[in-house]
Amino acid sequence: MFVSGLAVQGVFFGTAALFPICAAPPTAGDLGLALLALACCSLLAGLTAVPAVWVGLRRRSGAAAVVASVVLVCLLCQLLPLAYGRPALLAGCLFFFAVPAALAAADLIHTIESMEV
Image (cartoon, rainbow, N blue to C red; front, top):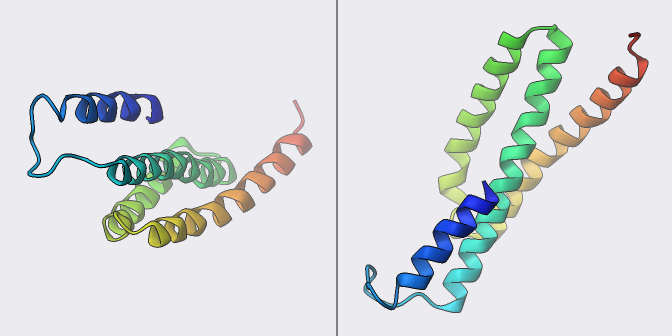
């Protein structure tokens, strides 16, 4: 996600001088905000996967993992538009998803280490 986002933003910002789509040319601040949002969204994509895998492993069900990931992504899709353009809210969303992901990852590591093969 991060690499493809960088490619798309590189093409957009690179051709903005040749083919002006926006009323004002993009500034360095716009580029920085776009890169920050892209980095946070890439991290959030990974952070939503960990609790979904944890739910699937706890229930021993692939369907439960899919349902959990859909619920988490729906929640993320409701929160992310509120935070776009506001770095403090974007960091809050990142923290909101990082805490459960860290707890789920710690429990996943413990569960996997204690499993018998």
